[in-house]
Amino acid sequence: MTEGGLKAVFLEERPMLMRLLVARLGSREEAEDALQDMWIKLDQLVAKPVAQPVAYLYRMAANLAADRRISAARGGARDTAWLDSQPVADDLPDIERTLIARERLAQIEAALAAMPERMAAAFRMFRIDELPQKHISQHLGISVSGVEKLLQRAYRQIYETGSVAGVDLAGQHRLAGEED
Amino acid sequence: MTGIGGDIVDQAIGWHMRQNEMTAPDWHDFVAWLEADAAHAEAFDRISLDQTLLLAQPAVAASAPPVAANDIFETPTPGRRRWMWSVGGTAVAAGLVALLMPIALAPASDPYWLDTKPGQRQDVVLADGTRIEVSGGSRLQLDRRNPRLASLEAGEATFHVRHDERDAFTLRSGDLTVRDVGTVFNVAREGRRLDVQVAEGAVLFQPDREAVKLTPGLALSAREDLGRVTLAHVAVDTVGGWRSGRLAFAGEPLAHVADTIHRLYGTNLVLDPDLSVRPFTGMVRLTGVAERDVPHLAALVGAGWRRDGERWTLSPQKGDAR
Image (cartoon, rainbow over all chains, first blue to last red):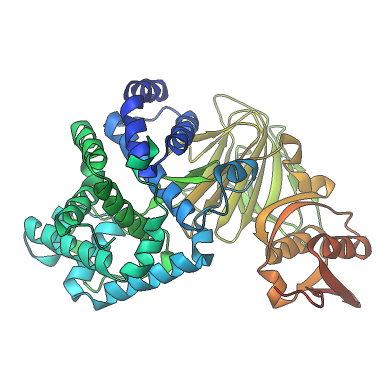
């Protein structure tokens, strides 16, 4: 799949990618912006084989949406226009400086520390080292479905920890239903 | 938030866990699920925020799993980490796995080092006609037998490459590689950070991996320590601006500004700790004459300055609350 091919797939999937971005970002305008960013990014990619072009594009859109949501959660002081006009794109380090993000990270860290060792280990291998669940199961000597349950519980414990700050982060999310 | 039922949370977690292996129909189902209920989108959003925060945080990520013996893996994946890509201020984690093979020089190589002192500049013309303008405080490895290969260990240089389609010019720096496609480009290395800006032609960043093509006006910044790459736009005429004393900074800590001035001109410039972390965005015009440059910089950033012999100090002005 060449660059041109990926762009063709993009154009084909555009309506559905748009729906994904609207659902994730809660705003048609932001979704359009994100699609535009995707197009630019596709411009930067020189012909390089992509095995599953459709899934690749959706992953890209989902990651873009996640990063945009992080930027929004940082306090919304920088809107997209500001970012576009700045020569700086070093986005994520700013997260560290943001109180809300730091607080939330501390909570997540605490949740990780409070987990049983195997659960935390499985979670780190999955999320940070991005190992397939099969590898994690070999590593821990348990079944793949056991790993899945462990991971599900780890996610759940993080989700449930410190829901107060969670409201602050999630509260800025304009829901898809409010848009139309 | 409390209103979201446990089932929905579990579904959202399931969707998040599967993202890397989802097929096209899975993604269509996922979109339908997100749209079906605002609570779905909200639960997923919260999980995604947490997980993105976590990934962006090297300190948390660095904690080693408390499990030994990773030699049972079929495919070793040490330090595997995805690069976060940014375009126009938005990071895109494209799931690209970049990394990183040891540099093997060709056997017929005869490498030598070119070092410049802070404040010293040097022009080098290689056997193939390629010209390199090397800034102060730089360390560049060149090869007498192979003029198409260079390696920048520290500092900054502007490359005017004589293009040869059959024998591309390759610049290495740390574990990263840039390959010219007929080019004037500037490269700066500071610690684990590499900046590449293109004025003419194009270069390929990581030509054997992501092969990102950088065209005139694009600036790439790679952080090897964070595994992150960001792209931004720069005015073409500011590329290699150090050569004419025009330095552009975009949200850089003042300590970085001071280091750059020291490297380029040898100016002994010390910052008050409060000042050194303050971010600076803007263009500074410098002459290399500290008596002019330091007061100019101080005025730009709203700081006070004083001089003790060759040592210049910037400190916050009185009444500055920051």
